[in-house]
Image (cartoon, rainbow, N blue to C red; front, side, top):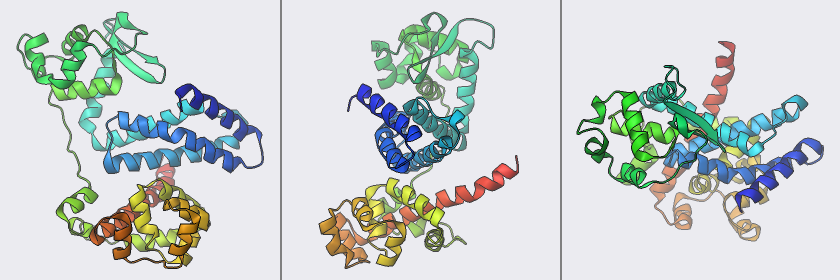
Length: 351
């Protein structure tokens, strides 16, 4: 679907959501289907991948659903440009993630913003919003869009060459940030998206943060159980997830989260659950869609639930140990969401 068609469809669904009393949840589901690809793309453009991508994607969808339902109850808070709002929520989730995981990168971004916003009083740099993105560049470039210039391609492919090309054989780490920005922009002859600019400067100046490794990835590579890499915990994750299903409010939210986890994790969890537990989550037709089977094919599987790890492994074309790891990842993801939700009231009460 083209971008203009997506915007038109999102606008029509938004209007229907706020004006039609009946089937507002059905309309909201359709609205979310329209914006989900844009949310995922937005996060991917920020170089988020793997478990982080899935976690941030799920968190964005959950925040967006909550805010949208709340806005319907208050006419003065109806969302106008829904696609823009959805991407803003994704940006906020990403920024929260970056503050937690990349404090050095965040400090650098604040320094760059200080210069771009001319807090020094010198009108050398500027930043401006173009479409749905913030760009930074020279003051006289305001309003211009990014262009993939030859110099930009060199920056991406051979950043180590900049010392000889624009810095008179000095190391970028030794060059003051204002001078580095000025020389970089004049050489590039194009503004850059703000987060990308920060990442390039961080790479040039050797600014880095510790990168956590995915437990699922470690377990898969080592062909060992994920528990091998985890410290002893007082939490029984499986029990706490099942306990959450006893609450009608949490059942709906857990189902929303489960629908957003990677398909193989979702299948590894659902196929291993007894039928009575699966029915706590949703209707049989919804479960069939979640495990990506036509209803008539799922009916045969339904009679066999719960499946063994060996049977699930044959369906997913992986090993039983990988099935176990995928299921644990799904439970951990739901548990992390539950833990955040339990912490939110306490955080608000302390403000």
